[in-house]
Every structure is written in structure tokens, then in C-alpha cells.
Amino acid sequence: MTDNFNLCLNVLKKLHTAKVLDKVTIIGSWALFFYQQCFKDSNFIPVLRTKDIDFLVPLPLPKWEEKIDLPHILEELGFSIIHNYSSGLIRLSHPELIVEFLVPEQGRGSDKPLSLPELKMNAQRIRYLNYLLEDTLQTKYERLPIHLPQPARYAFHKLIVASLRKNKEKSVRDTEQAMMVFSHLFKNNGLKEIKAAFGKLPKKWEKTIYNKLVSIKSTYPELTSQLFHFWDN
Amino acid sequence: MPILKDFLQEELKNSKDLKKAYENELKKIPKGALVKKQIKGHDYHYLAYKQNGKVHYIYKGKLPQKELHRYLKAKKRRAQIRPLLSQVKKQIHFLKKVLNDRQLQSMP
Image 1 (cartoon, rainbow over the protein chains, first blue to last red):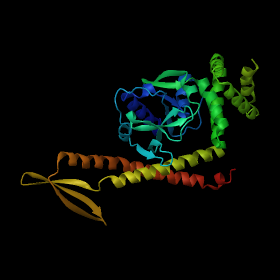
Image 2 (cartoon, one colour; image 1 turned 180 degrees about the vertical axis):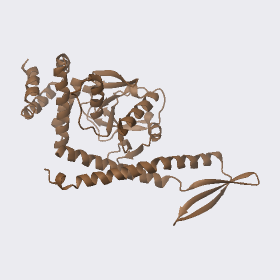
Image 3 (cartoon, chains in turn green, cyan; image 1 turned 30 degrees about the vertical axis):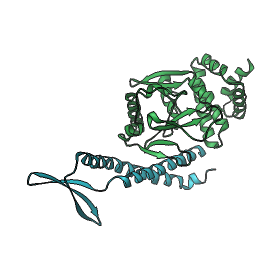
């Protein structure tokens, strides 16, 4: 196993001891790693994984049993606090891993991150994350409780994000990840799950995703035609 | 290939931020190491530090437990940061080298 993986495991252990892990959902490219463990599918191999591990905190904020000095806890593993002075965002960084907290953006939104004083951290507000929190799955990894979004929701969300991205490369990366998850689900009786996730998409999103699928039709002809069926019914 | 290039650029930016953070943290950590000397049964402390290749000692005398703990903590953190800083510098060097590679640069 790589240093990056071992460090991630140590971070998860620390968060579990601090009673934080049970209240957050792992999203981003690290979620794919844990899906890989859940699916036990030899064909499901996420290619690129960024260093960021994103923890999604639900709103309203969970009640933490006590105040936790998270930067101090992770400092023991060599993490350092990185302040983004323009946005005010705090990230905990290490040469092998970056820990970030996210919350769903609600209402009119704000440029400033949401303060998490009980963790001595803050969280970046991002739109459309509620959809991921509405249906999650729990798995165990090395006896640690891992919360992940339902894979179909994760994939639909990735398509939404991909269509909104200004950075073309990141958009391609998001699309690839989404299609990889859909491909696995179609091959492994995940139709019901995709249908359920599709049923919960807001009408506006359906249209955005449809347009995205049209634009990638030539790259993923088989998968997109399977997905178009949901709009036909 | 553009995906890889973008990915590497992001990693380079993150590594540069981290290097800066580690360097700032090292600057804030009190310089030198405490040396304990026993004179006539009493413990006295000196702060030893290197300057221009020479080791200097500053007399600190008897230090309260809190202050001793602060120096010990600083020593531990410095020992932890130094190899990480070296690692992140190597990462930056590597990423710059890859990103400056002619083949990668010629990619759209």
C-alpha cells in the first residue's frame, strides 16, 4: 500500500477516535476508492485520485459531543494548516494528503466558508451537495465506519458538476468518474438504484444532465443510450 | 494528456502552498535546542543554536516546567516538519521537471 493510502487510513482512525467520522460522508475521488472496496469488481479501477480527501458535513450541523481541535490532532501526523487568505478557507495539508471539509450551500449562498468552531475548522460551501446526503450507504473499512453517497447519486452529481465546470480538464475527469460508476451499476444489477436516484433529481437537473449526456454521446455511446431510457419512460 | 497536465499543475500548486506553510511554521518555532547542565546538584539550561557554522550557547538558567515543555514540543515538531519539507521540495522539483518536459508542453 502507498504512503498516501496509509496516511489516509491514519486520518480516518484519528477522526473515528474523535467521533467525527461517523457524522461525515466521504465524497470526491476518495469515495471511488471506497466504492472499489465495496464493489469488489476487478474492472472498477479509478485511475487518477487527487490528494484531497473531502468530508461532507450535513446541515444542520451535527452535535459534536465535545470540542475537538482537529488541526492539532492531525498535526501529530505531520499536517499543517493552509489558510487561503482570499476565501478564508482552511485546509489541512500534508505532502501525501489534503483534508478538506465541505457543506451544502443553501439559500442565496455566501462566498465565505462556514465556520465549524467545534472542530476548529471551516467548511467550503458548495451547491448541489444535499442530493448526495439524502441517500448514503455505510460500509466498514478496517473496522472504520465509512459513509458514502449512494453510487448512482454520486454519478449523477458528477455529471451535474462536470457540466458546470469552467475547467475543461476537470470536467472530463468528473465525466469519466461518473461513467465508470454507471458502467459498474449497469453491469451489476444496479438499474433499480439508478432509477431511484434519477427519480429524486430535480427537473432542472434532469435537463442539465440530459444535455451533458448528449454532449458525450460519441465518447460513451453504449452507456449514454442506456441512460437516455430514463428520459423516455 | 491535458487531464494529466491539469492534474499535475494542481498538485504543484498544492505542494507550493504546503512548502510555504511548513517554512512559516518553522520560522515560528523557537530556534535552537535546550541543553541541561548540572552544576552543584542544580539543573541549569542553555539554549544551543548554530550560527555561521559555530555553536552558541545562551544561558537560560532554571526554567519552569511549562517553558521546558514548550521547547520540547518545538523540538519534536521541527523534527517532524524537516523531513516533510524536504519531501515536499522534492515533489515540487519533480512536478516542475515533468511539467517542463517538452513532450508534455507540446500537448494541447
